[in-house]
Length: 143
Image 1: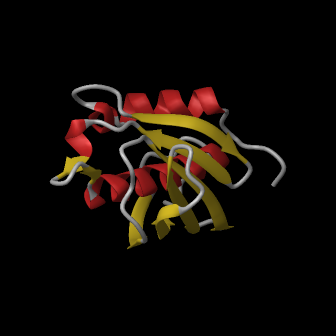
Image 2: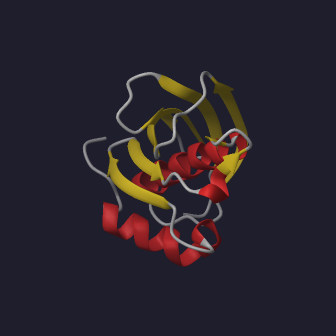
């Protein structure tokens, strides 16, 4: 696949319109790039995403991974709101520092009914992974 079906702007507008709850109370998730079988999303460092000890919580990292995976799929198949997560596995590798997190998603399979991808999450400016996720989405037959 050499290009996306939806541009960065089109994908971001779709996400903001159809999933406003992701940024309820202030915008914290930012879609930064989409490409062939890929997407990059940033989660701001904010107290609403922290757990005791001042680190970004596991549920916030899981949301980032899932949202980045969804954005990559949408950019590559078009605006299919009813594509749904069927599995998400996250390995937490190290404690993130007090910085925004960046999720780099790569789709490994994009079929007619299933999409499978992996997401590497890092603290901004760091090379080491803080989490690695794999996920599968079910794509509805009508698209």
